[in-house]
Structures are given as C-alpha cells and as structure tokens.
Length: 75
Image 1 (cartoon, one colour):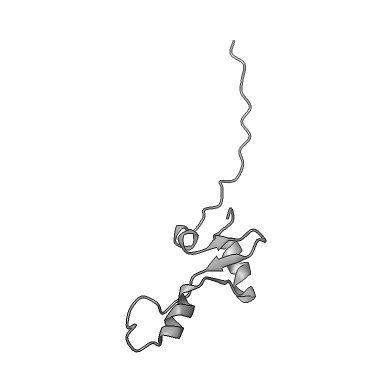
Image 2: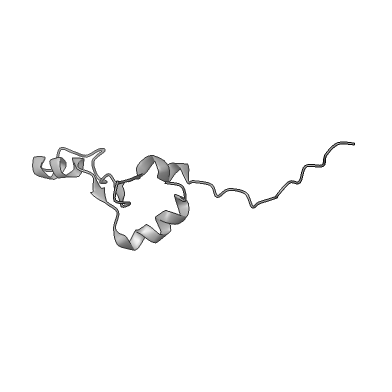
C-alpha cells in the first residue's frame, strides 16, 4: 500500500503588477525609486535645465507608497 502524501493547500501567491515592476525599483533603504515624466516628446520648448533635471530618478511620494506595496508585494 502506498504512503499517502499529505498536501497542505495554501492560498495562491499574490501577483506582482508587471507594469509597475518595470517602472519602479526598491532602493537599499526600502524606498521606491521612480523616473520622472514629461521626458519623451515635445522637448524643443523645454529648457535644457528642465530636461536635465527630468533625467534624474526620484523617490516615490509617501502618499502613494501604501498602494504601491499592494501591487508590488515581492519587490
């Protein structure tokens, strides 16, 4: 007679939002890093200084972090 294998059924894993995972990274201190918007087109009317500052990544605002943790559970 075969030994019966007990299976423990757990709830399925939470899914990561792939769209968000491609746009945000977690820093060493646990903050979320994002890139700035308004850098893709209509660049002729924007000043050089403004375009230069749009290149730099910035941290996610604290008001959005709670929602981001839901859609990025394993990040």
